[in-house]
Image (cartoon, rainbow, N blue to C red):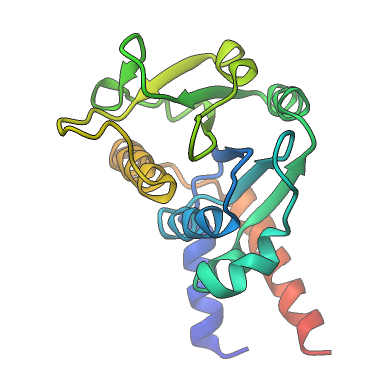
Amino acid sequence: MTPERLKRLKTVAENRLYNIAVVLEDIQDPHNAAAAFRNLDAFGIQYAYLVFEKKPKFNPKQIGKTTSASSYKWLTFKSFSSTQEALRHLRGQNFKNIGTVIANNATSLFEFSPNPDQKLAFWFGNETYGLSQTAIENMDMLITIPMFGMVQSLNLSVSVGIVLYHINLKLRENLRPDKQSAEKQLKEWLERHRKSQQ
């Protein structure tokens, strides 16, 4: 590995928002998920969680080879067989669960300011019917992306990108780098690189 490449990896690891995760629940089209993964990497999100309760399971690293511009290589994936299983895991890791929905009673994304000291998991649902009722009922908070056109819906990856951009605007103003997590992530990437060279 060249010194330039190593420096790039260190910079990326140090700029990750380790207190933020994205959960994709029962996504129908794997390529939509892969497009969302590209947003995660671009906006410095390391953790991508997938729930496969009603839709067929897919390997995010396989479908990512054609759609996510290799961003899948730099993300940490975890899959769950049910929404409840994912909720238990996230609560066990002290995450606050935030669901993205189209609903009048949800908090506008424009009014949402994340607490930099909290671990936040942002949930995105199926392309057709959104988050499941189980997910919605178990969220700590519901947010919605304000829309002003005739069509009240957005593509999955667009929604993910808008939410993560907003989160970046809020959190990076006073970002305190998580050096311990960055060192751990860098070691994982370097170990993966070492194995790939064998």
